[in-house]
Image (tube, rainbow, N blue to C red; front, side, top):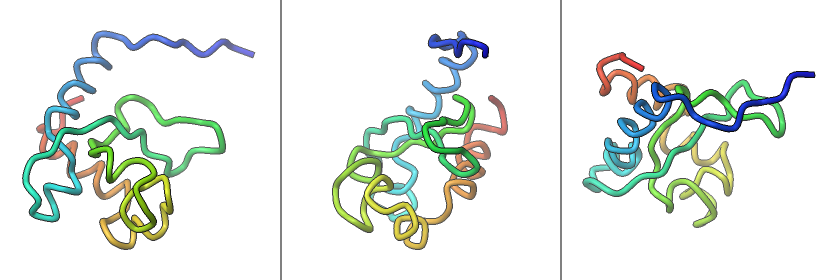
Length: 103
């Protein structure tokens, strides 16, 4: 069994910095303007306890990310959240497009 590395490479950190700098993708799409964001590793295609790579991330404000009410934050009810705001995969595509397709 291989040991999972716990550090980020310079390339990964540079990508994460660019993602966060976009601001919350949901707030932007909802016309709420810019809001500070945190990194959300998409869960689509991941098993329990697994996390996607640092390149499969979207920027979400704390309210749209964790524990601020069903239908508001992803971690309260992912299915309701995705019906309201779009799938993680679609939002990831938008983020990558806005970053110029570069990692």
